[in-house]
Image 1 (tube, helix red, strand yellow):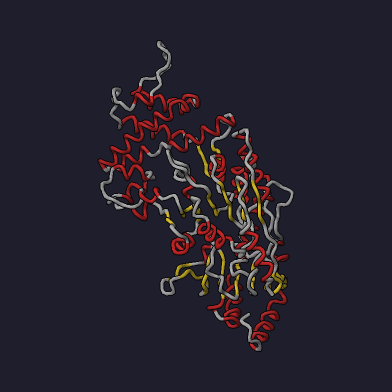
Image 2: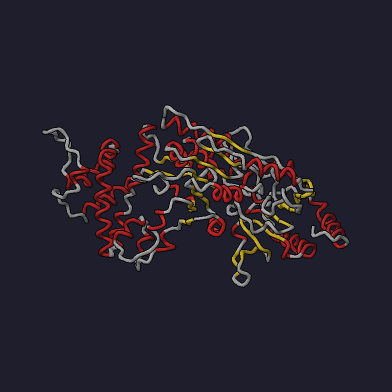
Length: 528
């Protein structure tokens, strides 16, 4: 039976967390009640300005109803009434540019004035809206529900920068007497011959790119950005998409990011990756209390990323952090691994899968069963208004974190073993650790056990990305807090074997197992 006392104590202890550290991590298991705790915390602390960042729009919609004074920050597309928004959005224009040329009133800009109770997609981590604005206090606390493996790449794409800067130069009408230039132009010592004339900045900029004159680029990038901004505004007014496409090839933020890390690492790569958690570290340094909420959190990776951050951006004061975990078990939830095969994308054995699901349907009925598998095997059923796979209500790997639609399903079927290719794992590791691993150094290992790369650098990526994803999907019908049945046609992680009652059903025993299951269910009044 579920240990209700243990769950009650866990949730009670959660309510006693003081959030005294700069960064607090809620790493309790799936079903522990983290989402409910965060909602309740917001209502119990009206003295604080609080933001919630998540990929789950459905949870934010829940908060709109259950959190007092809640404001859901949407993306611009949700509000924008500009008739050409889609055209401008297709070339990657920032919303501020579109707003400057639009006379229609909408709530997109207005929503950012509300900083009391805010919910927003995690993409807002890449904006300035979460940082304190001039004359304002900003957020006291920000809850962030996201994996800590997300990264932002900063490439040095010479051809794009050159072509974009030339397009900007060709489409800008220079006026050296403009008042705004007085604020951004720093004149060098009298008689200097190295200072480019204003009208030649973009031409010299493109030359500096070709020559990899990073010092010049860093010195004049803000001027280039200012000129680009004026060209964009004029092109929007003229609705000249062709100019916008050419100008947008010069990505100012991309180059700024590259120069920032290139300066640290002596420009030794064509691309640098910034872990997205750095934004949380920046906000913590600015005085905002950060709370990370994700059951797939990995302590070693977090410490490694914090160490990298403090190595790259040294400070007198180190960020402090606290980690809160749980160790619930429910041995009345049974998890069966069906055969010892991995059921990978290329070796799914769909005929075997369909036969297995047909037998499960006869035992439990489809309405009581949820399926999680690879995305390519799911489709949206417009009649039933839900995602399905092989006729069952379904979800796919990579999109289930925090998903509650299976919490009332007595039976869950996992089909497949979530994996990344060797190349993907290496790229992920290199991005997080600023490393230069080569995929050829890691030969393919057949999926017969989990994990496969113990003792190598990729062990941490496999644990955080692959094993944690399997743990998360297996917990989607809340087997720790309800008695459930879970059947996995794939590899079951070791942690699940400790949390739930586990049994491996060998290939030769599957027919007998299903026959006995059907007979037992026939004479039982239990749903499972």
